[in-house]
Image (tube, rainbow, N blue to C red; front, top):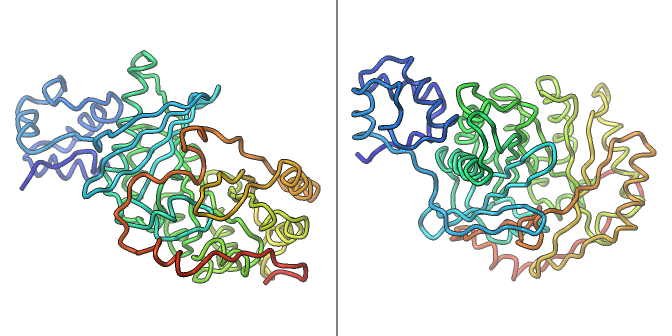
Length: 382
């Protein structure tokens, strides 16, 4: 059996591994801090570990992030890394610096099987789920790299926020997602607040309910349309989990959520989902749910579409976005327009593609099935 990558363990898993080596369980906390607080990969430098444990770790374990293939820096300070995850697959990770935070956008899959029409990742198809070590390894690498680059003093973090908004649908890789989240949240690991770790989903309803119980963090839902007909055309997963079910799952999630709202993401597509009538439908969707179900406490995040040739779609004009946002704000819904970051290096929302050895034949299917999307006329939600 080969060496075990310790980045694949949450603290409980690492404690079990250490006990399996014949060492005391408390040693796992010390080791965990070396891995994630200090970013150390050399067991010989872990000075407060027993020599016996260091020797055993040298024989049985490794600390290894995915191999770096390339690094690109945007004019606005955004950084994108491309990581090799084997078998011809590569995933992308993006760091977005701001005055009051540093946000890391992490991938959960090589490709994505959801196939949203406006997302470059979806057009790449799907190869496989990432392992825990490959998810955590993106954070481990980025924090270590940035600390060195910024010459940060010991104990000061470069990354204050993590968003699971990179390549893939996180809730379709649930078995690896939850242990990775626990590493991020653990006080012996990265010590991130639940409010500062966000999982973005296209709406896998059963897994939203499980996450609420297992590891509630901030939740963002890729909505993009206010009625089932249009949303099913844009987000095929809607055919399995329609809007009524999704909205009710969001209301349930708020019972355990670390924030008092859920972020609804809405990619603005020219003459597709950006009409005033659709804005009014969106107001009704979040304010009038099923009888007995309270209105959804939410924040709307309007996202400028980042075009790519295969999509056949166009970005909404600033004027259309502003008019759409105004209808939402007049209805009392907190609404923001996301600032595009990193688009000059294809690191902006919806642009991440990496390299994917597609097992779903998505490109062949899209060639056979041209995209035909039309805005739904007024007349109530469907």
